[in-house]
Length: 362
Length: 263
Image (cartoon, rainbow over all chains, first blue to last red):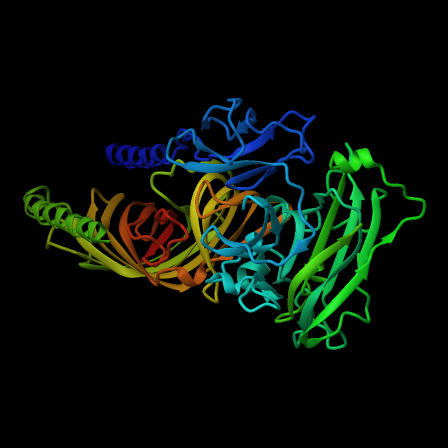
């Protein structure tokens, strides 16, 4: 039949237009890895979305360095990977995606200054137009360390409208100048669909590995920064107020009350252990000393209250001066507004304020 | 929207021209009576096979792993008015049809731009690369308005439009095994893999009203029984116009096949 023939021709055409199209060129513009002469490195380069920090030993000659980058498939970088540049001040690299439509400017910085031991939290920038990031500076006002937090993960829940809505944010009136405000917050509907019903405010020395934060939240905490000191105590000031309703996941537990946490860990890095994570932070064999706030000290208070936590060293540990100079020892210092926040237990609204923290050392 | 409205108007016009044009000529042709009565009542039952699809497929869709058209039923009662005294080869048909349009798809997308709005106004925009599983299960009350043409006492053809009211709805699914880049292809990256998925439910974003083109044919096995096939092609996006999460329009395209009984 002529008509049936037409009919099937039409159907056939429909299926033709619905074929899979050719793949578009890649739209990503990432620095995926950064390779630097391993003799001068103290720590693997920290690669954030628009920033690379390379921690090197004090003797490194910053006037002539040629970091090598690997990029997203098909992407290009300018200046070229491996170009000799003067890194006395940070250099800026532009990465262009294969499709040419997206570009990202990376600030690449070599850092020789070891991080200090006094933290007043006066330096904050707004990252991504969204949330606060605290950082430390050296005498030349260069950024030498970003404090890590889970804010970039909270950003993906879409619940926050401004930096103050994030779990980790600046406290305008701290004990002296600015301070840190950590609040346990609900992650809303979208957070719940990702299996993370709440987010404790947290601040720590190390990196938050956002990419792996959903697959493995505990492993996404990369704890530790190289230091050139041997600590013996942590001190500082806090205020704390626990939230009203304690939840474990989404289930209320009326018998439990939220509490905060502060701990510092001094450990040795080697070829196997570059950083501690949420699964091994207190138990790894490379841990040398732990300072953790006691149950009695974790009180609720509306006044600035001081804390002083001594490091407890493992028996028979001996300092190796060469390792200290080479940046083989690392410290992490961690604050959180809900002590069990990494398993999504705590009370919405639990608020920990901290300021004027110091790692006391010899 | 405007474009679609224009298309519908155009379709109507074409249909009217064909319809009246042929009415006049057909009267002049042979005399054999195809239909005994001017008004013919019919009930039909059948299944819908098809899917909700962007047309053409956007380049972001890299692979379709699975397409399950599901088993969708339809029942229809209709009346056809056949014009003319003698031959009655042209008519107009309308009725009411209850039908399901469902499907399940599983595909891989690359750098697919989307925006997720949570129930409390949470808002995340970003580009997803990875697996997307979608399940649609909608029920409609549909009114077709068709011009019919009987070629002889065996074959009938129809062409026209349909208007549907959504009465039961489900558009949901999950994304898995891939990564989201916040804000765009250069944004922060977060990976989903293994049993980590993010679910979505856009049921409440579906439009209440749908329309489109319907073209069909039927073959009369006897005076009372026929088999038919009908293609319905949706012309409006199934989502409300302010819904931005899915950036391309999805339209229902279904083939309705079954049998009818003529009274």
